[in-house]
Length: 539
Image 1 (tube, rainbow, N blue to C red):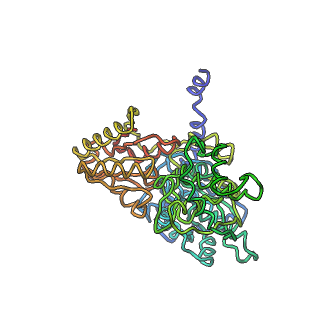
Image 2: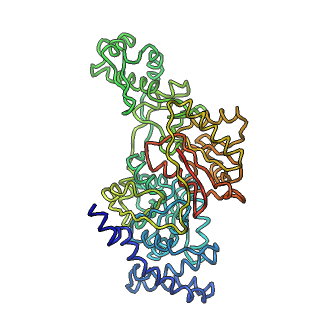
Image 3: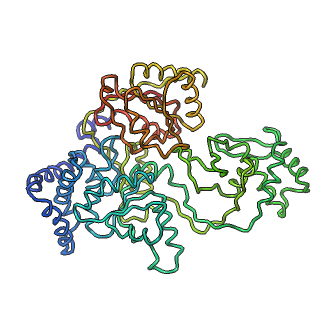
């Protein structure tokens, strides 16, 4: 109660932070007429002038006002987009090494150009980290125009590059890439024998896009470089043959929540009988026990098309948070081999770890770290504790007018999906576009089959088709469009409303179930009602 009264008088901490920044924004705006008078070459020459002043002992902070004014004018000339005042505030917060929470559709990509330009003047290289290769390529081409205009170089780290190309990309003033590429390059550098073979330079400043996804959802995911070990793969086939004889709750017990499984005494006895050994817990049989446990896990905890797909004779993992496939990644401890035996595909050799790091430890190496996302405030305490990053919520440029309806809950799944299809049909009939969010691939395929029966034209977007992702999502705002997507639904791609759609109520978001991470639900909601557009959502 007292807190509420004080907030009313003094404003929340967030309001106070924004208030402090406002005078700086006013100073940047004052310089605008002066920048507009400069011709292109004079504007570009400012970069050389700033670098000279830094060498003479001025600090980056002292250059902020002028550098932001220059970068804003460059954005107007190159892209025809003028960063709004709220985008300047966002840029200042990123420069201060904080997290800027900006609602989806507020132009985060453009905001990043301001602090990136300012910090790249130091000549130590600035990294912009995105969630996937498509966004890294798109942003570096799209925003690269501004940097090239101002005389800076850009590089993009893509999966296909060799060492020499990577070194060149890291030597650029601004480097775009995904968190995986940056992390793996660091590990590969650490396995080299000569310093001149290193690709990366020192870790100076990074701006992480979709910071919640990378620094929290995937924070404990270790990046591992491994090599093949000497073990034979025969045993997996042998164990796989006996698994069907084990009965649930008799021979083993499953803990669904912890995704773990334990054999009972009866199960151990059956295992000993089938594998023809006296005691499974004897040190010399420890490997058999391990294989048996992994075989049971593969059969009873992991489900095809939810946890993994089988593509081109390989078992490919599906990321539970984003619904994307992760080709090249393998489960460790023989679990992947057990899945390969279960699905009857070629069993690859087990790997041993040569180098590993988690994203959490990798990103802590940067002298300064900043991030942006549409949904960070729910995790503010965690960001502060682990990374020392503060979260500031940005005001929107135009008021948010999306209608978020209350959740609707059904007695069983059948009734729920009947209602979902009914709602889609009604909205489709009146021409309002719908984006349907599903928690996993299986549900998206099932819904798609139900809609086919009802003859509702639609497109499906999940890990199986993620190459066309951006195109499908970008067209999701057209009249009468129905798009079914797993929760990764086009983070970072803008859904523009076509002519006449706003009158029908804008884009409707229909979530078919709550995800265990609240933020992923907010991400889905945020695909609608961007930049003051009309829209609605319901889970």
